Image (cartoon, rainbow, N blue to C red):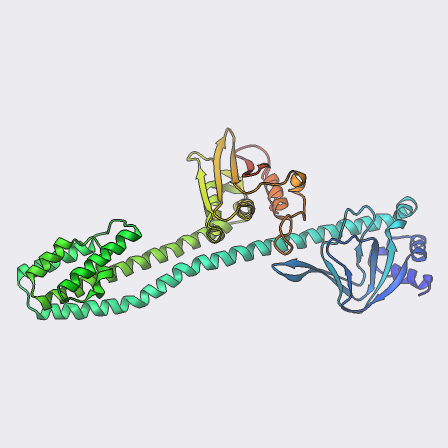
Length: 470
């Protein structure tokens, strides 16, 4: 393509409208025009980028590894500039660049940048403005992608946590109808036996013992007790299928002997069926109550974690509640690693003024990283205490620690030690900026077996404005 035609095509792009034609002519003489076919991989993750590309026509996408697969996070179309730019700090491609349509590009190698900066101020100025806009847009894309990943992980863990009590409640509710039917059948048979007042009193006494809350037992004690009751039933020629339910109560062997002495053999069997089915129904009812209570707790944790139905304005935030809600949201991950997570908050912990949902993002990032760092059966300790006119939150883990050579880069954007597809490198950058917007600070110390991240936040009432959310 003749240089004059290249200049005309560049000048027609909005990004170069303010640029003197002489600057574009200089660039056209040193650069070249190329045509790329769909599917071509032009950059690979981590590889250096040495050219500036101006897309004259076509489309290219930037793909990164996320969750074991490749996902497009942004694309460039005709009129946009990609690749390296003057004063750019890009050291390597953040992902794979793939041509998606037949694309024509104008390229300029970075070896010409010193001359560009020194002699072509108008062109340099527009390229720098474009770089700032591009960096801001790319940061927004990465932040949104990181948030989506965090939300996906939390949603997956929450769905698992919610499924357990929901399934338990459903299963128990299905069995409850059969238990009630069995209890009614036994009650009719017992009524037909026309028991005396003394016999009814004996039946009522054993039902009362079975209805009392049982004391806690170890698995071995529970198994021994079930065997003992089953053997008693067999000795008295009664069905042993009631043994597991009767064993879950505090029913004594003496009470069973009294019942056997007070009732005829066949009636004693009916009475025990009635007592066992009633006891099983009460146990089932209690299990449903516990399961639905757990569901209520989880939903409450989600509402507290996300600050649903709250206005987007600063308010006084209960940090202790936020920490508890965050731990609940990550409970599934902790259980998967069989990790011990302990939360200790001071009773006199003051509130802080700010955005609760954003502070919960900080706790989620720190706790999630701590759980990633520890080995199986490791431990994480979260504490919060008052410090004069501020609060101090500590997230400590017993993982291997952060290597000395990378500690200075921990808060850098896009830096991560996690495998490809497991992290964006934005978690701690986001956490730091949220803390700073709340007029706080974040720091860490690390050694093998003990890494601690500390977040200090001013207590509500401290002077100074709070910035808008991230």
